[in-house]
Amino acid sequence: MDTLEVEQLYRRYFPLIRAKCRRMLRDSGEAEDVAQETFVRLWKSDLSHQAPAAIVAWVYRTSTRLAIDRLRHRKVVLAFEPTVQVRHPDGVLEARQLLDRVAKVASEEELQAAILCRVDGLDQRRAGELLGCSERTVRRLLAAFDSRVARIEEAPA
Amino acid sequence: MSEHPSYLDLDLLAVGAGSEEVRAHVATCDRCRAHLTEVSAPEPVPDWVRPQRRSRAWIVGLAALALAAGALVAPMVFPQADDAPYVGVKGGDPVVSVYRRRGQDVTQLETGGSVRAGDSIRLAVVSSQHETVRVLSGETVLFDGPIPDADDGLLPTSWRIDDQGLQETLTIELSGGATPWTTELTFPKDR
Image 1 (cartoon, rainbow over the protein chains, first blue to last red):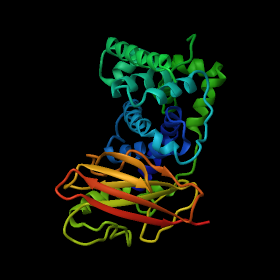
Image 2 (image 1 turned 180 degrees about the vertical axis):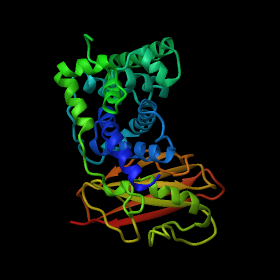
Image 3 (image 1 turned 120 degrees about the vertical axis):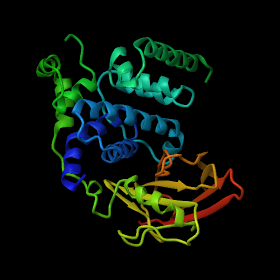
Image 4 (image 1 turned 45 degrees about the vertical axis):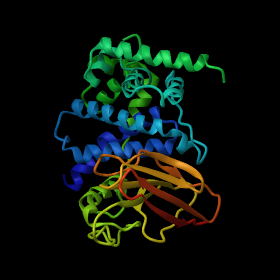
């Protein structure tokens, strides 16, 4: 891919990659890291000639997986400096706080379903299409995620 | 459409693959229009996106690292020039590389390279002889886990530099192999 193509790819996709990463991760530097990593993987993936819908779906899957890696190592990152909060509408902030709380105990599949449905606002059918599983499986994953949240909230501090 | 579309639907619209239903919703919804404006706004392309430039994203430099890893064994391996990015004692691995992100610019730190408050530091570790890596700052364990399988070797976390002290020192311990391996990396801190 030549420089011009990479720059076009950046202009078209990086802003939405970064916005998605900011929804998932409350530390803006961390979100920028994951956004860059997602973009560079896109750049190296040879997907650039595919349909935009396929690229966006790939971006959602890849950035979600990379963000989950970060969530699971979050304690280390936050130990260094206070985070910078990014404003989000509606329930995104609450959903993200739940993710922070259960990231180390929930399965990757549960976290993927929770991010796509609770943070990105996909319905269960669309989340299943993106994850390559059935709507019923997504429902089961979300129920498992909610159970973990409930157990954490019930546990004594 | 009574509820907001998902962010995926909005992002598809932003790249020209959205539905008419979503487009109609956006026309009447400030929240969704604000998101669409955010992800559609033109912005300058940073240096790390241009392949021929020295400043790169974390992972871009690591493509070269993966190729070079078989010829390196130095505890600290840093670039000297763009066309010869990795140097060290010949003979094999492991290789530890340190990347500094300052704003949008990512640089692989060279020997004596400095950091300052607000920078992020990220490590890449490649070793065919070890299975786990532990990173410490003093007595504090910053990372303890498997060496990444991916060719780039990037650890799945980064660390923000604070404004305390005159330097940052990281200890990297590799284990799970025949011979444990340790190195210490120190970076002076700019004021």
